[in-house]
Image 1 (cartoon, rainbow, N blue to C red):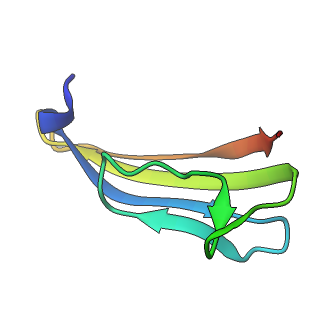
Image 2: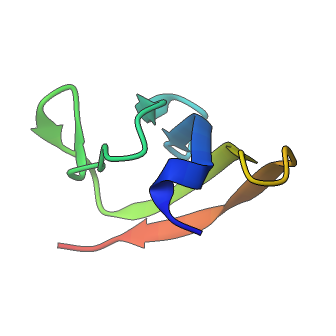
Length: 70
């Protein structure tokens, strides 16, 4: 499946307190490890991704965590 068949509904990265570190609906956007222009603290961050497969019409939801290291 290429990106033309995927419609990103939401991509959110949260800090450990539930604050939003990054949010996008553009499949080409990337988090640079910064929050409001300043380097984010080292540690665990949590993500949610919701997307639709335009080929099948199905919607999917993924969540998990990532550790930011410098």
